[in-house]
Image (tube, rainbow, N blue to C red; front, side, top):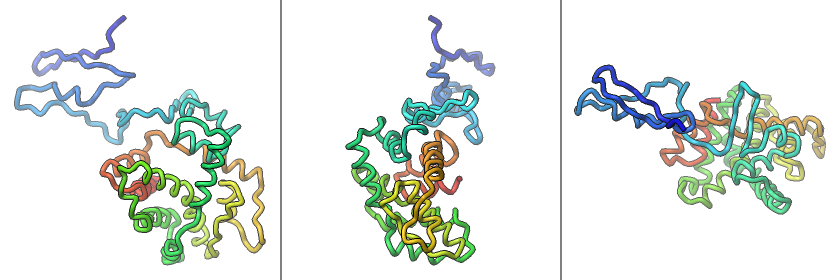
Length: 263
């Protein structure tokens, strides 16, 4: 079988270099050996906007847009969209497998316990101008959560990291709904944990004076599928922003705010 290598001849020195090929890629550091002389730093790659650079290896998402393929953890997106809820897919992305009934009940219960915002965070939102852009409010508020949960800076503790993941999944719909209602001058609506994830988001967006919000089941299911389709972004701008900020060991709220700023 032919070796999976790239053979390069440096026209400056006539030296020949052999570089391994792994899954259609070469390592940029393998080019460092190509030098004009001993004092030369070596070749570097130049790729504005990462148009042809893979920054990591992922086992989470596989996407081939030209062929219409999207898989999470090996599961076709069509199957997940048809049979799963958003929180089931979130569990899959985090843990590598879909939850059984007991695991799902525990997971949904855990997320529901964290949907509320601290009242001081609510007041923080109320401090924005009446015409503040909802996205700017969301980015600022997510970053401000690092002051509400200062333990989040201990990013090397897996239990603490996991807690912040749950909080982000639970609180993002609440923050997003509050920013929307702020833009309309409407009072904020507290989460209703009797409702499922997408229906609860709709409740916080659109509830008016009715004692109990009843979500349209067709709209709620469509919204849940939309969340599933966008549950992982592969290596787009926002993902790379989060990875870059997170690599400095900034807490998850600051990394998430940086990613949201690119949307």
